[in-house]
Image (cartoon, rainbow, N blue to C red):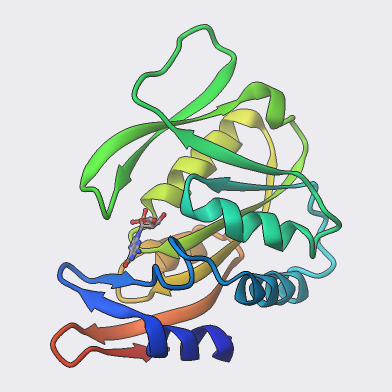
Amino acid sequence: MKELEDRIRRDGTVKPGDVLKVDAFLNHQCDVTLFDHMGAEWARIFAGKKIDKILTIEASGIGIACIAAQHFGNVPVVFAKKTQSINLDGDQYTARVYSYTKQKEFPVIVSKRFLTEGEHVLLIDDFLANGKAMHGLIDICKEAGVVIEGIGIAIEKGFQRGGKELREAGYDVASLAIVKAMDGEKGTVEFA
Ligand code: 5GP
């Protein structure tokens, strides 16, 4: 998606540890017009698929997913919550996710009330790097018995393994911008 690539080139910065900072428009300050165009693009890509619900992960996925939902007939958006502790009374699905940016593992939960067996779900997130966050959401979907129709990603770092692994596993992954390489010193970002 050229508009997103241009925006990354203009307002993104490359940080140490292969981190792309896009907080000026994606995950701190939010450009809702850009989000709207991203939602339209996912709707075009996933046209013809039955989507009952969008599942994302807090915090950065929420805004993107909510705007995208407007392009999928205003389906509900559920976000997995990051939590310190897991309650064991069985009313929630849980998975453990290793955070790329925070470099620690944490549990994520979704209430069983908000995912129903047989529902068709689209997964959305802001970044795909090593795929840990997505695998956490997939684990929750498997436990809930929902059908994963596709995975919509804003920015995939194509030089990390997450996207390749998910596609090899058969998931329909639509990344709107795929970063092939980035150079922190020159401040350049190259797209696939
Ligand atoms: P993964 O789980 O695929 O390794 O990493 C995806 C998650 O880590 C995303 O939810 C995102 O919040 C965060 N993340 C990974 N790489 C980057 C990055 O380069 N920049 C930013 N801002 N977040 C990232």
